[in-house]
Length: 87
Image: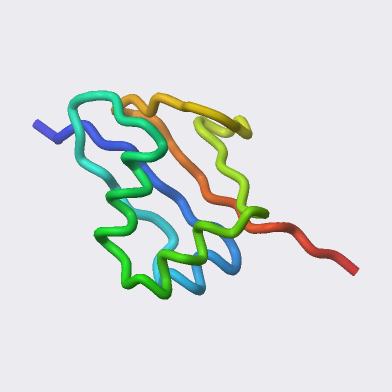
């Protein structure tokens, strides 16, 4: 049986900076966004992890932008979105 996971997606420049487009966090209980950040900090080298701390990075949970305290349940999809630029 497959372990319950939270899928974490990285888009555009974040994908480039982190060197991957997604990771899976195995958990059978809900975690907070702060706990997710602690896990990401553990998995990525410091200089790469810092790209996720930019104030302009948006977070979407299950394809809805979110702010504040968020509980992430197994089966959730979390996306880190860099600022969008256009011309």
